[in-house]
Length: 279
Ligand SMILES: C[S@@+](CC[C@H](N)C(=O)[O-])C[C@H]1O[C@@H](n2cnc3c(N)ncnc32)[C@H](O)[C@@H]1O
Image 1 (cartoon, helix red, strand yellow):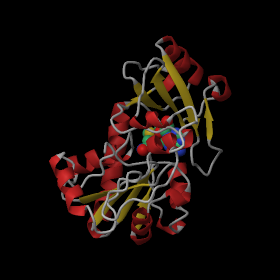
Image 2: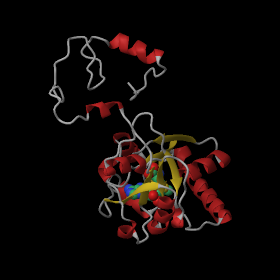
Image 3: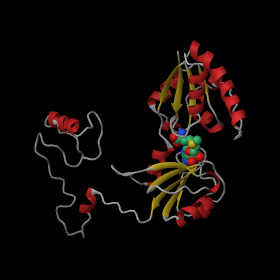
Image 4: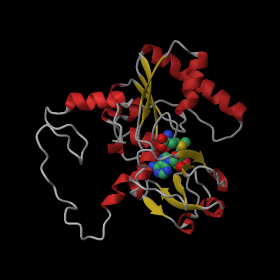
C-alpha cells in the first residue's frame, strides 16, 4: 500500500503519462493541492474518489507547517490501508507542492511507502511551446521570479512564477538578457501564449514562465556546418547507408550491425545505458 506522487503534466488531460493514468485509476483516493490539478485528475477518475485536503494561501511558515502536518495525518493512514495518489501539475520533483507532503510524511509517518510517477514539467513544455532546443552540453538554470523579481547570473534560465512580467523584464533586459514569456502552456484553461513583449502579459497570471538568455551568448552547434549559401548540392541528400553501418542522422545502430560496438563506445565514454545526445 503506497502513497503515489503523480505528475500530471502541464494541464492538458492527454499529457498525463500512461503510468500516471493507470495509478490514478487504481488508487482508492486521489488528493490534489489545487483546483487545476483536481480538474485534470477528474479526466481520469470519478469525483467520488477525490479526497479533501485544505491548503491555506499563506506565506506564514507556522501556518503552512501545521497545514502540512494535518494533510500528512489525513493521508498516512489511508496510504497504510490502500493506494493513495497525490497529484501535482508538471513533475512532483520540480518546484512542487508534493515536496512538502513528502518531507512531512518522512518526518512523522516514515513507515508509509512512497513512490513518484514523473510528469511532463512546464520546463520541457515551455521549450516545446517556444520551439527552443536546449542543446546537448548547454547550461540551463531554474529560478523563481515572483512579484517582479529579476534573478540574474546564469547564461540561460527558466523562471517560474513570473507574476509581474513588466518589472521582471526591466531587470533582465538591464542585465543583458533576451527574454521570452510563456503563459498557460498546454493547459485546458486558457490558450498557450508565447511572447517577447511583457506588455502583452502585464495582467498577473501565476501560470507564467520566462526564458532568459544572455544576449551575447554564442551558441555554435556541430550542425551549424550545414548552414550554407544553398549551393551545396549534397545538402539534404538521403544516401542509403551500408548495412551494419551506424546511421549518421539518427545515431541509432542499424539492424543487427554495430550494436556491440556502439554499446562499448558508450561505456567507454561513460554513458552506458544512457541516451547521450553528445554523439
Ligand atoms: C509551483 S511551480 C510548479 C511546477 C511544476 N511542478 C512543473 O514541473 O512544471 C508553479 C509554476 O510553474 C509554472 N507553470 C506550471 N505549469 C505551467 C503551465 N502549464 N504554463 C505556464 N506555466 C506553468 C508557472 O511559472 C507557475 O508559477
